[in-house]
Amino acid sequence: MIETKNTSFYLRQAITYIVITAVAVCMLFPFWYMFIAMFRTNGQISSTVLRLFPERGFTYVDNIVILFERNYLRNIYNTLLVSAARSIFTMLLCCMAGLAFSKFKFPGRNGLLYAVIITMMVPGQIAIIPNYLMMTRMRWLNTYQALIVPGLASAFGIFMMRQYFSALPDEIIESSRIDGLSEWGILFRMAIPLTTAGITVLGIITFMGSWNDFLWPLIVITKEEMYTVTLRMASLMDTGLYDIVPMGAIMCGAFVSSLPMIILFIIFRDKMLSGILAGSVKA
Image (cartoon, rainbow, N blue to C red):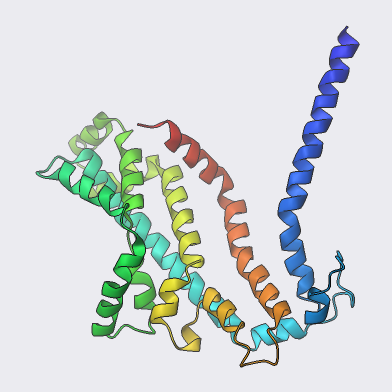
């Protein structure tokens, strides 16, 4: 009887690992295909024969040359700068607003909170034209300010941090005031250190959204030296620059641009998962 139970247990374990491995292979295969496409010609990429390795090995580098001669490193720098700046300011401003909505009592607090939440129901595309007109009148087109300032805070981030701060006992805030901490001290020395998991989740979500943003940079950026990686990928689709669309170069750019997101997740995966789990059980 015991041997039968052990056999059944090991069989279930084996099936589970087989299924997990199959799912992992299916999810990782697109990244591997992008990688090998960097070293293949257009004809080889469009071939109906599936190959797991490039026909010429890893010596064909024309696609990499095409991509990086278009100043792709500058595009990566632009995207990193914009994404990092937006993430930092979003975390700071959303923490400030979230703490105010959760722990400070002032007239109209609930009304303002409801107004913030309502803006989450409004499509972001509605604000594109007003924001563009503002950028034009401020002469910020083709500048970092145009890419960073309109996304400095979000209603989702404010509501999210408000929920995290609401879970903190009021006694902590009151005892901090008794000990002589100012409101800024309460924010930076008490509230933020106690909610780092949630702040990390907000920062990663903001960074990913900014990194993948395409529509807004397309509207406010026309100079190539200010391109982000998404605009560079779109520009490679312009057949007027080449005889054919360089699919290998596009695959190379897609693979390289996905690396920062993968690295970011690997570094902060524990914080991110704990922050999501913590937020799912807090009122």
